[in-house]
Image 1 (cartoon, rainbow, N blue to C red):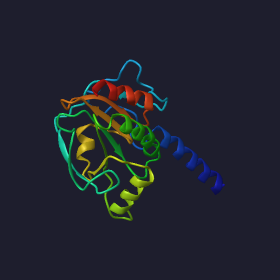
Image 2: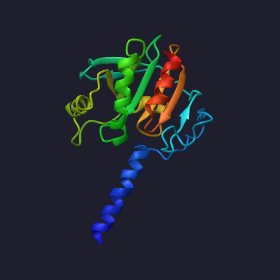
Image 3: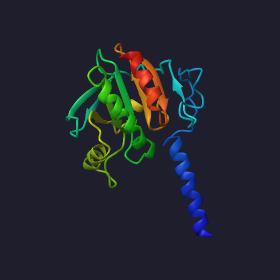
Image 4: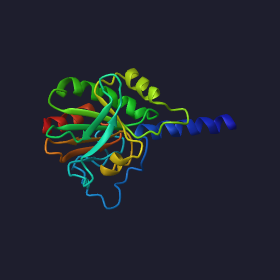
Length: 198
């Protein structure tokens, strides 16, 4: 009986992981996020939302620490980048859909990287078995080759009202949010969002 309960728990966890690592799919109370007419079930059938209207981003721009890693230098990065369209990817090393999202991010970075700033940021706290070397290793293992940042106080997640991971935000060159998505986004929809600002 214990084996059956464990298998049920694992199956439930994997289904929940496909829909996004965090969040219940609802828009945070008081959010100005408006979903597009085709959103609601998400562009990939995972029940996630895409938005064209800006969440309340009065705390932006924010500066996050960047990590010395493949394609990234230690220092700081402003989110969104000043005067440049920006793709922000909020991720965690324990998040299975975040791994899947890396494939489309790599493809689009190769296509638009000269015209669009790509930044991936984790809010994971170091300690308890997680080190900065673990984040670097995850980044290299999944072929990240753009700026990676660390925001352990989750200031950026709060500023963009992220309610799950992965969470994508596309900013135009003026720093305005033009598109958001919670959960795994299709490459096609992410490409369309980037083309709108590039």
